[in-house]
Length: 359
Image (cartoon, rainbow, N blue to C red; front, side, top):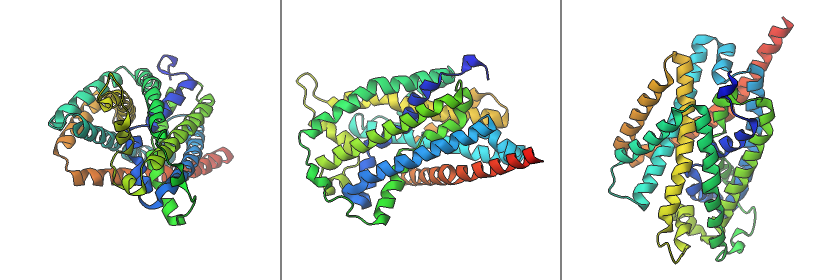
């Protein structure tokens, strides 16, 4: 890999942060509290520990293969079967981007522009994403850096206002839910914290990749703490009935912010959030189109145009029920492929490598 196309190891921190913090943080509190109630914040911490283990597994696998997931599949299963398995993962990246896009469009239509057609919003957002992706991976990383610097300040400031009306007694008693309920909170939190699997594609683009491992773990630690704080702030502000009925708890918190010079603070917040969403979509679509380029030996630009057009068409034709189904399948794919299949793949690859060395 040409060093001109690679990025410094410390930038992995911002890439991992960008891959984990999307529209999910705006409404995950309701999902994780569905069964575990106010104990769900514990599930976020446990899920963060699982993600840390998954980061370690991915680095082990990619270090052994000295390449991305396409190289791993090719070395383990051969070109044909390996390409099929890689293709499935590239489709997952694309479906994840569609899920993020639809989620953000829904927020814009509900909170800002209810009459604006979906296809116009989808085209405008993907046009911005195309501008980022066409500049190459270094530009995608640059946008990830910006998505951390500017919106992060607003996210932290946002939590100060609800704390004035917080009731920390809501969190007591701790651990008064069953293990099954807590497992449900962990499972939902793991999807909320998903995104680190993009490392499987951009690993070769990291200069001195082994030294970037600590930055990836630090980023997961930071996002886990961020999600935990977000959950606790929401749980201490809303009643248990309110948290289960509020679709976007974090967005609804904005309503309590009163500034003399700004009446609709949510307009500024959602507009700023476009940076985060654009950075995440750029990363996911870059991973998907990069993989398809390697598998099918065609220009990456062509795949981006095709997937973008499909995304716009789907966003226009999709129903609310289909969106729920899509989110469900993307969640299941994330759990089975990355937390089930990848660890097994590491074991298979390690065994085959030892046999080859001994043979």
